[in-house]
Length: 286
Image 1: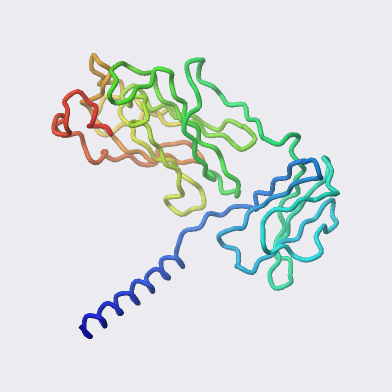
Image 2: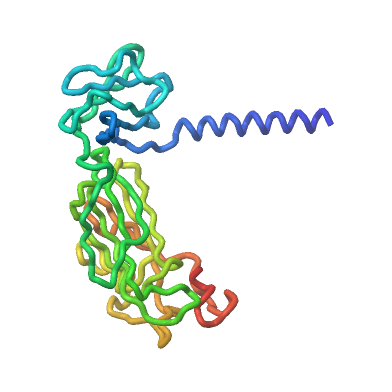
């Protein structure tokens, strides 16, 4: 029993040390303070980010039009209501560590309303904005928006019928359109077919986007996503609209340039469709 307890204790200590090592090497995003100011009834509400790289003791000073607003650094929260703020006030947040201001945010003014409106580049009247994600594609410390466009004839796996293409756009936070990727006719539009992920996979400070692709997919530069001798013009849909044959890929796209970086075969492959539990395509793509 004593020997068993000793081994368990050693295992706990090893895992604890490993957890600390993992935490120390965790990849962190480079983000700015993300300062936002909004006019409210009793002044201006200002909020900002506490970064993952900030020391736990970090405090913050708020400057309005060049004058410090708070008496002592704010350490218990990352927001403040400035009762003397106005719609045209300019705000800067400065981080404080050890009594010294170490950085300053960009100056911002309050939004004209309590929400932000963006005009998106809608592909057509039969499309609606669907899933979204965020990531910094150019390393400037500000998120861009990734928007999946969903056609009104998208299908669940249990439903037959052909669908229009799924499209994925990228926009700046001010609504500036950056690029569009067309997944093509061989990626059926539906919640189980068109998931995507945004992350800085190579650690260069700029995010990439990864998703399932197939012949017919085009990257943001209009280049076909294709492997080997596969036919980019193939139509692998059957009479019921399901795609049960033909190549399937996994592609990573560069967020900054919208170009295909690398494509591999999708794993796991379909294999025998009926081995998944039905033969018409309900379970194979879930």
